Length: 282
Image: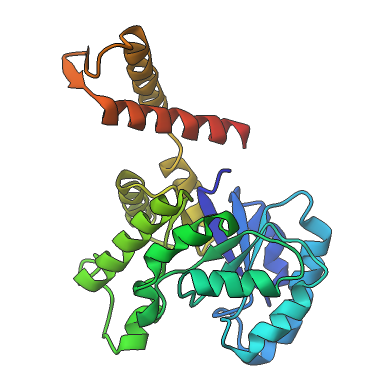
């Protein structure tokens, strides 16, 4: 399953839905939560319901519902009852109990993408997602709600880097996703006009082990897709590494182009080739 780019679009802006699909994003997240005001949630549900009914067969559509503890959650469930999006995005998730609670309430089984860092309690539950891995299509995080929840002035330094508490949250989600064997999805880059900054941000995310990233504007999709797709040089290196180990199966270390390579290099090479295979399949 390829989830390099996941593009948010407000649920009360149906005129943007087709544009979002045309962006080339691997998934489009139709949002019923933060980007939709309270008074606009009912028409947003209607618009999302209509669009998913028409397009879910030929498009990978996710729906971000409202938090489990909110009154709007019940209305979201009613709107989801007879449609089948690709997945449900769960905000304010607090570990495996929240995933199980949502799964029990859905009228049909749907993959769940938890946003795992939006409350203080959530941070202490990130390791539990491996207990509900079969329900998940990935694990992601956010750096906007948590600072507000604890009274922090910001999650970022003056140069845009995350401060230490939010670097910790990001790292925990990265390892929590890999412990559950599901894709780790990097959070948004909020300045959609800064494409150079986005490219550097996405490159860092892939370097660190994330498989994809969320986006808030169609212009961000192509740079994100590029960042999370192996290039020709990476694929060529990976093929050489796999071939070198295949040629000497009885030893744990091989030499390639003047470098000594061991098992972690082989694991990385196989991961690159698997990512390329998934990308080529679409």
